[in-house]
Image 1 (cartoon, rainbow, N blue to C red):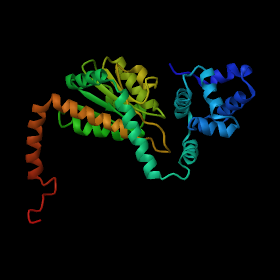
Image 2: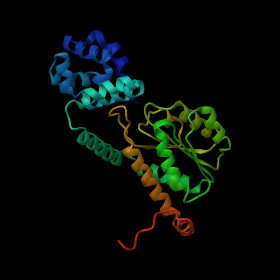
Image 3: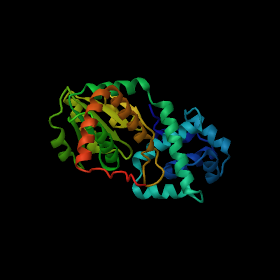
Image 4: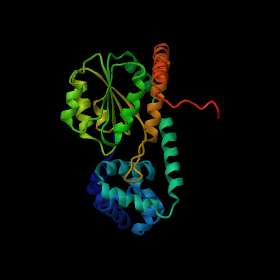
Length: 289
């Protein structure tokens, strides 16, 4: 379970040394910035050594500074406003090459997701989707493109795929009111976590459906109501949440489900190719070139 770092700081403040109190005070006052500082930068900012910052993390009960920083970031991702996110991003970017910074950051999220995604959970998710009578896909706001992408390809396999990207809980409930215990629900939620998606997932769970969460943390609100959870890293970089790793997990799901339903998929695609050809859906290659 994640440590509530602000509570720990407040309850232990009387035992801190002078330097440790400066670190603690800065974190409490400027947690939105401190969460994304290296140990060296945090130490320099408050006027202590890097080693003092590292020792401070251990005193608080973490196994090192990276663990303390992760706890701060998890807290921040749920509390930051859009304006604060821009301020943090400005501090992080500085004079760096933005293209390289973003690409390298996304590559790191893919690596971490590959290392941590549970393959047994992934298999159970594929089984649930393949065996479901209906598949409902929930994703709102910035997660809506993920829901649309997954739904677009799953519809090649079945007519009983429902994409729910409603902006309000009322509209969402109108689209999922028929969910039952023969159905699977795939819900996407990343910081700042949508209450609409959470309410929809809770309703589907109460109706007996198999609820699958694709989110960034096992302690996210969505994860608490799901039967299966797939974790994909989506750390804040700026105003934009990186969806590279979640989209890659979606790609893997599509490939795995398609492999399980390969014969049905082949029949449907063969029929579609004829329709696409007849109605000139795709531009034909110019044979003269």
